[in-house]
Length: 429
Ligand SMILES: Cc1ncc(COP(=O)(O)O)c(C=O)c1O
Image (cartoon, rainbow, N blue to C red; front, side, top):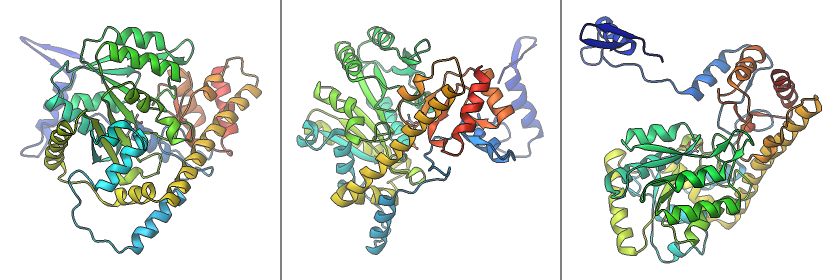
């Protein structure tokens, strides 16, 4: 929104203030007439416009959820099986523990850090269930805002998931950014990131996407993670990993945890937010976890008690349905095996759609280079399309995506890939 300035003598009112005043005058509510409208959610806005569009060839590449090759939501067979097992157990619906069931939180920590991880063996991980990835991030930042006694500055990659700054803002934590995306190469700007982080004040908090960076789809390579770990160690910065896509990037949950595990091996006491929305397709179940590594068991117990205080005052205790599904899968060798296959099949479909999209654009004779489509990883692809080209895709061709040129490759299917490629070729030629 642009705020036109209107000078009223000594008072300068913005267009926004006037809107609020007009609204308050018209409103009939006794208490809430002054409340201004909140900013609409960009992704949900795209979905609504897409749903209203009657065009037969319309494609939604805005949504951050996996779709099968028919463009339909996908329920993982391992998840269906876990649901059947849980149903057969005829469980009750009593309150769960504030921090989640211990077998659930233990399984989450193992998945993130690995079976033989030192902090897990030494029981120095404070792990609690959280309301999916967003809830885990919010809980982590809330904990930081209450208890962090070093430099209270969050350094976010540029760009980052649109909700990160909103969450930091909600807990009043000041933000800075470090370079991440290199527009020239459409790749990771490792030198820029290292240079920026080397200037961060001691004790500042660095947010890192563990894998499948959203929105760019660009992950640092192993040697680049090593450089990041080194500068973060040298500058005594605090690493906070957002791991919303474990397994979704390469199809292998251990590969995708490389950065988290490397940082732990290097002696960092990390914080990790986990989500099971994407890798188990449990979007609406809101199931995730937050882990804070604490160095010693006494500190771990105190940190755990403070996490429980925060949880108790926000939502009291977590939901039990989604976490039962996750626990069932992660603690049964048979289901775990099936799930790993399910995750791989989703990641493989996305990887093959990347290949098909790239080769179809190139086959159309497009003069640009499109290797970034296959170099990038995970659900999202930063196409490099500018806002005008994005607008043409939406208005002329009924292909919906965000203004920054990000597409969800999960929305591409063998049926629409030809059309998407043809239109991307047209707007870039
Ligand atoms: C980078 C990143 N972090 C966290 C999340 C959180 O997702 P959820 O709250 O659905 O688990 C998302 C979802 O799109 C994401 O892209």
